[in-house]
Image (cartoon, rainbow, N blue to C red):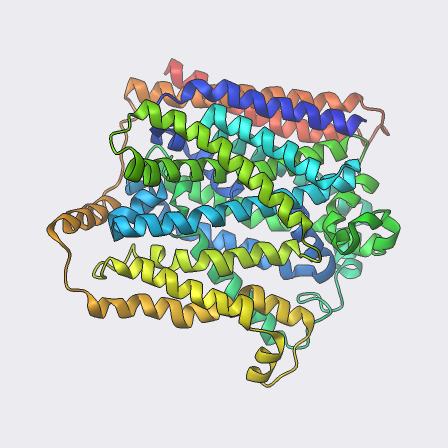
Length: 583
């Protein structure tokens, strides 16, 4: 009952964020990208949280339980990707000076590609959000004994309400708040696991599989290292392309965009060192999943690894707080998908085909309506995915990125560097990539791959290869070269397109610089710090009050520790706001 109360209070808090930040959005620019005024710590938090969902604590945690260190490769790959953001792509993304990523695609590749990439990106965003919702449902079903579909609907509705009311401001603000809470909870959970185990070395000695890196079902170590390399490549590409520029187009200027990328890089470097210690602890001290009492989950039982750790080894009330973090992680990814999808539809479909003279006010209203519609679609997709049997959340998430998203990402990465390609290079590369993905998903099989390689593959080896290694290799050998081959057919742009392409490359080479002494800039910065600081202070106090939940005396300090971290972050922001305003 206490856990349910904690989650309900958290839901109310999230909806309050949307209500509070509704006054920040007075135009489509405000609603879809925060007016390009956001500070680096907000942008960095949302960049980090878009690569983070309940899947981290379900599918990925289950992978850590069964296979040891292997899962960390994906997250360290994210860290490398964000470092690439810091060095190059974050600045270029902000300097495109666009409202949506598809606006950048139109400038670089033309109007036909604007529609092609719109048609490709909307379904992918919806499917990813549906997978995240499904991962959350598995966790909630285990915790509260609630039907998965009910969890999907309730969670989806809350995210939609928050996103509709506050737009990008509410999305990014909630991402920052949730990032602070999740990191605080993760640190405390890891400390508890280490203390109860008697040291990290004990966990490593007892909790990791005999094949500490690959897991037990691997015969060829080189296949694993190929998977790791492809994981790094895939994560780098997924965070460094025009479609992924939505992470940084809301930043105040180039400097804030680069600092945001560095923050996300740091969080993704530290994160894997925290998130999977409880999974390894469970493998050491509670390896018998039949004893967990969650038979209803069937083959998905390992996805509840993190929950069982919190339930059995953390104080009463911590399950509710952890569930709030799970909801937070999923919502942070889903609300970004909602905001991004509605922005793309309004600007690249409605304004192009339906009402070219649409006013900003009418597009703002339509954006809110489309957020509701896309929310309903995502909920429906989540329910459909839940109906599929024997679906691995880990592999499903990886496959969406490598099979569906990769064909779209390749031209939008190379488009930053290669100028002399015909406009059809964008959509043609997308079509070739989709054909490659179709071959991998529906034609390629374990017997075919084993015969080609001349070796016998285990189920685990082929599963990893099919979800990541094979897609990356084939897209690297077929899709990427095809983009470069199109250069042979380049015969120049029309005068109109030449102006757009020149403007694109001029923009990405020109830093966005804001006058820090401008009273409007100072006011905006202070308002962001003060509003979020106040929300964090309120959240920190609420978590600290959980110390009064009946628990052993020592266990109560878990809530004090989490609350203190959140509270200090809020006080720091609020104090900075007041200090800046006085100055």
